[in-house]
Every structure is written in structure tokens, then in C-alpha cells.
Length: 508
Ligand code: HEM
Ligand SMILES: *[C@@H]1O[C@H](CO)[C@@H](O)[C@H](O)[C@H]1NC(C)=O
Ligand SMILES: *[C@@H]1O[C@H](CO)[C@@H](O)[C@H](O)[C@H]1NC(C)=O
Ligand SMILES: *[C@@H]1O[C@H](CO)[C@@H](O)[C@H](O)[C@H]1NC(C)=O
Image (cartoon, rainbow, N blue to C red; front, side):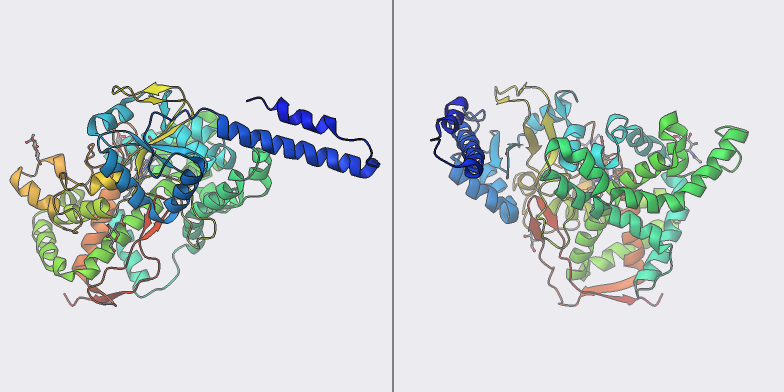
């Protein structure tokens, strides 16, 4: 369909207009012609996904309605596709594109094994969050911070354990009942950063590509967040750099923390205060909302069903009696581990990073339950069953339907806090069903080479928090026995934002 057909309309305009309106109509008609030809192009362009079955119909109008429904009913649509096409790849319309959904375990394996230059995780993230405009290109092109999390941070969890525990204790003391006074501005900027990125991305998505760098620079608040955080981190970075310059990388009493490890691995251009601050903020970005939402989902389950408290207390007390408060102890609390894993199965969160409703008050970067392992095809890709995926397509795994599949998780609609602990009593507590393990049947942390590198940290942190909570407080929902409803926004499953949980300090 050639657009010149339509554009030529504007040249055959009658000439009896006087000058101003001539110009006006000429522009008007040209615009109209462009619109018409674009419309025709959209309607007549062969559908590159015609061979892939669509949920809710593939016509323009039916797809439009399905895409609208997707905002608040993504689970239903994903489930419908999963039921109907079970073992086939299917597609769901998102606002401006088709989202390809994969569910079969062997195809999830194919998805995770595909090379990064064919099915790309980072290009998906960058194309969704505009990281390169908001936080600088090197965050995308040089991912050394991922290695720092995967290796140094994870290896040093036992070293960090006492600090973590102290932090948890004082945080609980501050929050229940609420008080302030813990470096509030620095904490706040780390939390606000997520919102800054989200709001900026919503602005950028409506900005023409060529204007994005400009808009990102002048009309978003990301650089202000970085500057605020740099106020706190800058002096620390400079002091450490001075010691490195004087005594070398392994200077005496070097702190064992994320900043030290980032400074060890950073290349020269990454060692500036701004760049290091960027890295810390972006890691906190990946770490904070995921962990806090997982904890909130878990807390709601526990408060709605406080009968889980007693068996967990017994487990914690007996493990602590043997091991003391250590990282090893955390790995031996199987009921706690199971409870968190079940909550993440049931409610889930992944990394779908999709459309956030711009007007939603707590519009977060959708950690999603619905899908995981989202990739952007940088080249054409063909699954071994012959399904052809054209370059430029977004592909995801069907997390929600998989995690609620009766064959994989019997009685899947019931929250069963000790589901995994019970299985583990039969397999000798091997690692298959522990919280951090991923498989094609459990993809809340993704699966394969991009599986969340922070999950060991997260598991250790969440278990320490849960153990502290369970030992020190009685809890219940204000509305007793009722778990607050989840909020389904696009592909996210958010915990209720305003429910009341009652806490009472236990007399020990
Ligand atoms: C319960 C908490 C968490 C959940 C559910 C979670 C989930 C995920 C998921 C689903 C992915 C993408 C995997 C994929 O698509 O294959 C991911 C990636 C990532 N996560 Fe997490 N995460 C959590 C906590 C954390 C924490 C605490 C950190 C940092 C300390 C972290 C750092 C990262 C990073 C850096 C990536 C990108 C990995 C890459 O580029 O290969 N996450 N996470
Ligand atoms: C932290 O991890 C690194 C390995 O990445 C290791 O060399 C170092 O000894 C660890 N620090 C401590 C205090 O164990
Ligand atoms: C959220 O909670 C509801 C019950 O309140 C439950 O049916 C649902 O499975 C949970 N998870 C998701 C993803 O909606
Ligand atoms: C671990 O347990 C799972 C079942 O939970 C089982 O399929 C697997 O074979 C076991 N692995 C080992 C090494 O025992």
C-alpha cells in the first residue's frame, strides 16, 4: 500500500482559496492524507503474527478491546490463552504491540537459552524504561553491577548478616510504632527514585524518539534524585578513593559492602561520584520494590491466617538454639522459606515492566506476577516447534498461569504456606524446592542466565525480617481473617495499598 496515492490528493486542491486559508487547507489536507495513508497501512499491512493464535481475536477492533481489558484483567486473559492453547505459543494485544506468550517448559528453556543478541533482556528493559536516557548509556552497555550482586554480594551474605539483623531490628522499632530519624532523606531518595524513573518513562513514552534525550535531561527528576543521593554518597566515595590511592585496593579496614565491591570492579569512567551513585540507585531500584512487595504480600497472608505463627515460631526457636542468628540458620528455616516461596507463587512478582496506568496513585514499575522472562527479539527467532518470531517482538513466559496450574501445584488456588516445606520433608530437604531455586515451573525470579542475581540476598533479607516479625509480634488483620484483595494493574499484582494490619509486641 503506497502512501503516495493519498499524499497526492493534496496537490489536486482547487486554487480559488485566498492565501492564508490555502496554506491552512494545504497543511490540513496533507495531515489528513498522512493519517489516512497511515490508517490504510495499518489495516492492509500483512499481520506478521498471523500464524500465532490470539487471545480475544486478532482484528483491529477486537484487539483494541482486549488490550483495554488487559489493564485490569491481565490474569484472566493470560489464563484464557493458557487454557485454550495450552501447549502452543499465543499472543495477547498490549496497547501498542502484540505480546507473545510462551508456557511450555521446553519452550521456556529455549527462551532462556537464546543468545542475548537474539532475545535480549537488557534491550527489553531499556526499551521499556528508557534507562539509557534517564541514567546514562553505560548502565545498559556495561553491566558490571550485575556481576557484583551475583558474586561479591552473594558470597558475603554471612559477613553482612549481623549488620542486616541490626538494621532490621531498628527498622521494626521505628516503624511499629512509626518514628523518624534514620537518615530520612537518603532513604527517601532511594524509594523516590523508583517513582522518578516511572514518571519519567511515562513522559518519554509519549515523546518522539529524537526529542527523548532532551526531555530526559530537562523534564524529568531522575538527575535530581541522583544529585540528592550523591550528597550522601559523595563524601564516602571520595574518602574511600583517597585510601585506595594511598594504600591500594586492599587498604586496611576496608568496609565489606556493595560500594566497596562496585569500586573494585568499576572501570575508570565508572568511578565518578555520579556514576557510582547511579549504580547504587539502580540496584536499589531492582531491590527495593521487589522485596517490599513480596514482604507485604507475605505479611497479608500471615496476618489473615495467624495460625501459621506458632509452627514458624517453633522452627525459628529450635534452629536459633542450634545455630544462633546466622546466615546458615536462615537456610535451615524451611517453613519460613516455604511460606515466602508460596506467597511469591500465589501472588507473584516478576519483571514485566509494562504499562503502568498513568493516573494510578501508586504507579510502580510493575513487578508483575503475570509474566516473567520478558525478552525483546533483536533478530528473527524460530522456536523448535516452528513458531516464527519476527525481529522487534516482545516475548514473555506465562508466569501467572504456570504458577496456578493444577498439575504443577495441586489445589493451586489455595494459599498453602507450608506447601514446599511439606514436599521437602519427603525429598530430604534437597534444594529443588527451596525459595531461591528457579525452574520452568517456578519463574518468579526468572530462570537461566538472567535469573535474578539478587535472589540470594533477597531470600536472606526476607527470611530475617519474617523471623524477626514472627518471634517478636503477634499479628492479625484489623478485618480479622480476611486477606486484603490484590490489585491487578496491567501485568502487576500489587498488594492492597491501604489495609490495616494489627501488631502486638510479644512478652518474651
Ligand atoms: C523478592 C525479591 C525479588 C524478586 C521477585 C526479583 C525478581 C527478578 C526478576 C524476575 C528478574 C528478571 C529475570 C528474567 O527476566 O530472567 C530480576 C532481575 C534482576 N534483579 Fe531481582 N528480584 C528481587 C530482588 C532483587 C534484589 C534484592 C536485587 C539486588 C540486590 C535484585 C537485582 C536484580 C538485577 C540486577 C537484575 C537484572 C539481572 C540481569 O541483568 O541479568 N533483585 N529480578
Ligand atoms: C567477600 O567476597 C569476596 C569474593 O567476591 C571474597 O574474596 C571476600 O573474602 C569476601 N569477604 C569476606 C569478608 O568474606
Ligand atoms: C491475589 O489475591 C486473590 C485473593 O484475594 C487471589 O485469588 C489471587 O490468586 C491472588 N493473586 C493474584 C495474582 O491475583
Ligand atoms: C530433590 O527433590 C526433588 C523433588 O522435590 C526430586 O525430583 C529430585 O530428584 C531430588 N534430587 C535429589 C538430588 O535428591
